[in-house]
Image (tube, rainbow, N blue to C red; front, side, top):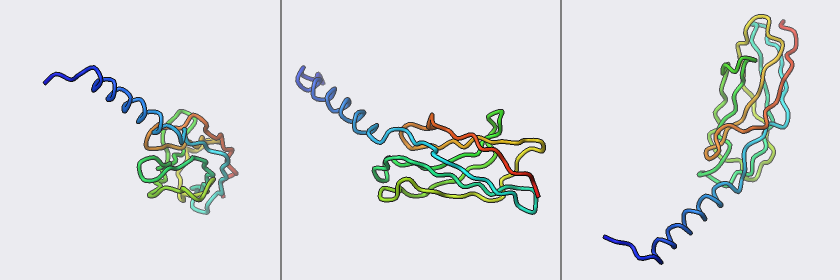
Length: 128
């Protein structure tokens, strides 16, 4: 089956439209983060994330706590969009950080763009 020139142009338009509308929300950004040392030597970490969630097909779906070498130390899955709650703050408990580490990096992720480029460097309080 051979497509006409108009059909090809129409499909190209649809493809461009889909890409343009899929990226309207932009990348997720970590605006702030806090850490609290737990008695068992782990940390509880809260992250404030901004993302123009558009619904189930495009939303911030997780944030990660990274070691300074880029190793993922913990992941907090976000199971639903936060269309009407922006920015939003969520927490993760019992994050194990290597002994001697004084900071971590918080990175957010969405379904379309993957990892956001605006991360947050978080200094850790002393362990209890």
